[in-house]
Image (cartoon, rainbow, N blue to C red; front, side, top):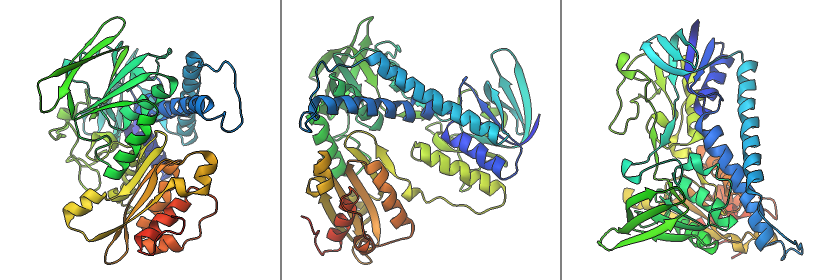
Length: 466
């Protein structure tokens, strides 16, 4: 078959790119290695993890907060198999939704491993046969895989990654999480809420090290309250899994004194790597950097004209919504439009509870760059809406230019900040000021009032309710 565009990979970047290409009149095909569409995000990432996060939070609230609300329960317990079943149902529905969108937009679906024969020819090795398609243009959107060093003895049984953690159908007594980043903290909080003792081992001096320091402090304070133990500035020296558990040896960075924890599971969550295995990049002369990511230009085109790459296989944050924006950009660029992405305005979110959300520059980055800035903060505990829902942990922090008052960064820890961060993105997209936010009417009582108050604080006029 001959296509205008063929997309390799059906994750958020790939399927969104395919849809936009089809909407713009291109004959489009999409190739997916696995049986279901949606990639890591829909199958073993964003969607299933959020399903479990919500389920575990419901249980946690029922156990620890309902009585305060005047709701008394008897014989409360977790049906872990049902929780996993619900997660699986959510995943199935979402993946079927993507398949529907492919059919609706007349996009041809191929299941199998896609690899380049030449610039315009792609081989698709399926379970039963190998197919070949030709395409004027190609978009590589094959995503990423978890990093798991050989020394950690990853066995998919007791030494696991996020993929296996999403299907644990009985509550472990103890779990060690290697890595204090987004994935480790989200999944760690799922099991901590259900009663598992969680130990997080992190090499850096704080969790979510890429985010603003105030967010790190607020989140760690909240996670300690649900029983998570943190071992910061520690490095893992050995991991060994058995049929029924795992032994993790680790030590402080600056000492030789070794510590040991025996747990039911060891979750390795130290990051992800670009997944380009078996793509046949060498057949077309596409190069990668020292981290295995595909090199692209400002239009996300590789050094081979007509072949593009998006999402986790190129530089930048490994975020589903970043990949989606890139998919749209490539499709529109192919059609002759002039789209752009401001990567500074791609928000980052940690879906723990409280949630963490951020966009723009951190205070540390502004200091390093020598930029004159102002800081405004407001705690959720001062909001009537937060007190009403018993979600009083966290704060909103607004960073504004000290000379122009333009908002340069917004950092939030609290209830529904994953949704609230969109207001900050919108303000920064139009280069709004802290005073602009402070003068906007925010409905009362809402969580978003914290944004208004923090912006007011940043202007130097002081917050009203603090």
